[in-house]
Amino acid sequence: MGPTAGTQPPSQRPQRREMTEEERLDAEDAARAAKFRDLYRPRSNPLRFNFMGRAVYSHVGNNQRTASGRAGGLELDFGGTLNPFGFALTVQAKAALISFPEDRKTQMLALLGGGPTVSLGRLSYVQNGFLDLRVGYDILYAPTRQLDRVGQPDPNADVQARVPHGPRLNLNMGLMLYQAGSRRYFQGFGVTVGYQALVGSLGGEMPFMHMLTFGVNYWLG
Image (cartoon, rainbow, N blue to C red; front, side):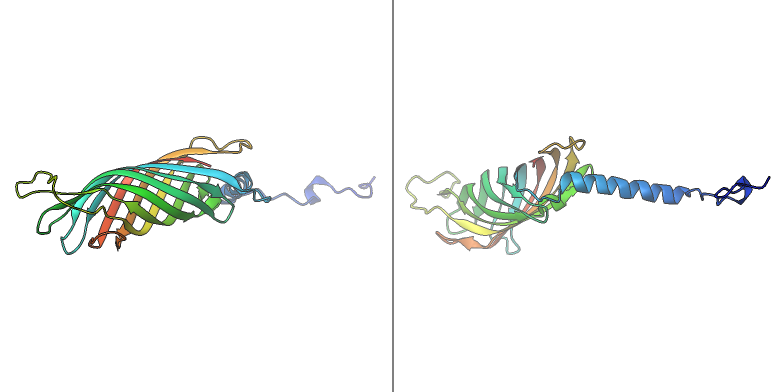
């Protein structure tokens, strides 16, 4: 009796081709990428609260050597994220010692203030970590003092506080602490490298200055 209709001998059945190791790895990578894409960037694109805190140290100077010093403190971003971009209000508070060699030595003692910031939003999520570029512009208040000829604060000096301002750029990277499930907020820790140009002062004279910044960050979003 021959084979019944609709059946084939095993030797004539089409054989399923086994995936190569490279194809299997590519399929796993694609599945993993799709999982994180749906987890981090849902199609509904909800607006979510985002916070980033940075503890930083900055070296300050310029090419003309008319300013030099250092600053250290906190930069805090409060804002929101969407899938393609994010926005925040940045607040910074730093102790500083920035000197200007003039007729009498002038020093800025702190940098306080902030300004608007835009970021990559949820595009910054990269599977188990984050890589975020943030750009902003700050207006700061800088208490200022003058020193006498022997290097002591001069109580009789009539010195005006500076109001430095300028663009800011931060590259933040780190690892997520939690990425499984459908959690609304994710947390991470990492490092920050940044640059800020202080192009001038709204109060008093001040030379152009560069600030190169290094630090650590905490991410919630």
